[in-house]
Image 1 (cartoon, helix red, strand yellow):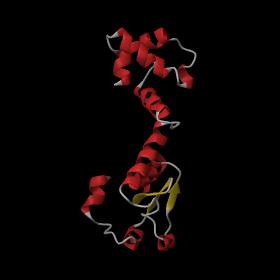
Image 2 (cartoon, one colour; image 1 turned 45 degrees about the vertical axis):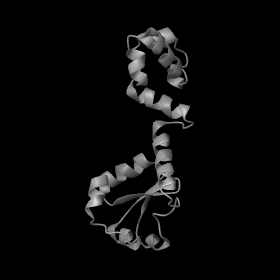
Image 3 (cartoon, one colour; image 1 turned 120 degrees about the vertical axis):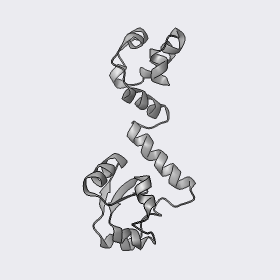
Image 4 (cartoon, helix red, strand yellow; image 1 turned 90 degrees about the vertical axis):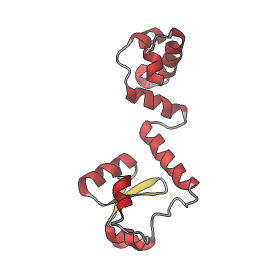
Length: 142
């Protein structure tokens, strides 16, 4: 919606949207008028504005924070998807969801959250959590 407002026909909405983009370092030296008429503004910039306005440095960080919040609001502790016995298997650890997702796509496995991090593990480790690694739900959630 932010990008649509910037590119829309309503000048007041376009100026208000442009003002929000000025928060970004890449547009800090631009004017509202320049942004309203620019084709340089992309969806990635709008997503970054939303992230910054919610207190996160990037869209990736906002997604990770939302995932942590989702796990927390489900009543699960932030380390619920990790059991100490899982250290017997080689787990691939990552600081961001995007890195973990890339590893999952490249090497397979099961991507799980752990506090402020993510890890990709094996079917045997999933069994340690009492879960079925071959359940169709794994395919459904990607």
